Length: 124
Image 1 (spheres, rainbow, N blue to C red):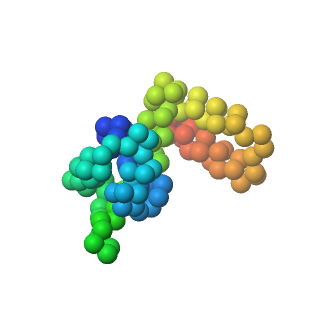
Image 2 (tube, rainbow, N blue to C red):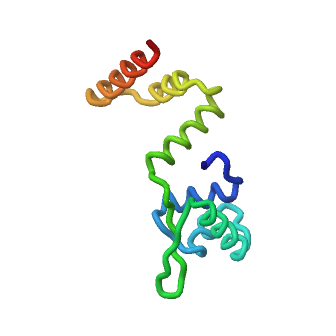
């Protein structure tokens, strides 16, 4: 879903995801080259209509939060990242990520090996 959002809506969604919850004013302060307050409120309403966020009322202010599961959001964002920067190749992305880490913990190596083994089984 994130990949299909317009740039500004995606920015707002990512701000809410990172913050946990925020008011329209909080979101506006966190935005790069923030539009007007009413424009931010309009985009928040659009995101709510799409089912991406929800709000609650606290002391006469709307407090917004993401409603998507973080694991699903991470997966969608990672898919878009791999598509954009690695021509859709998960192997190329994984190789690049492994190059960023000088030393992996034994449990990280075990998790990577388990993922590789599972991918091999799916391809048989």
